[in-house]
Amino acid sequence: MTAANAPTFGRVDPVVLAHRHPDDFTARFLAYLPENRHVFEAFEREAFRVVAKGFEHYSARTIIEVLRHNSALAERGGPWKLNDWHTPYLARLFALAHPEHAGLFEFRVTKAMRQKREAA
Image 1 (tube, rainbow, N blue to C red):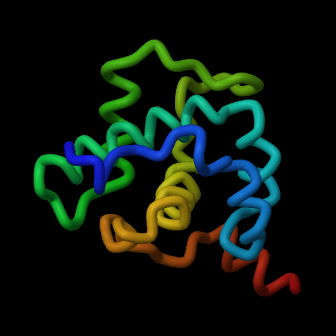
Image 2 (image 1 turned 90 degrees about the vertical axis):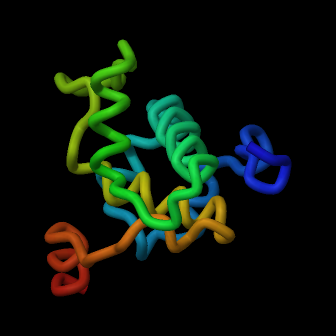
């Protein structure tokens, strides 16, 4: 991994960044993130490992499955080690934090976001 694609831990506060873009996230994710920064940081590390291997496109769900398999990472406040519901928002947050890798994940409108927009 080169300095150009190294993680920027400490320079980008993921909670502040997510709250600056509330239309990209559910209220549930925004409430979840402050107590689970470690989940985003682990996701970010794995995404950078993928980038370092030369992938231009990858699956955020695969990263979550790798984290489930390889770690004892536990979410605070939930019964699951890693909740699938947050996967698309972790990928969106990664793209916001690292715009140079915004194309790594493909984004679709989630059911929760579709409902949020319809309610507005």
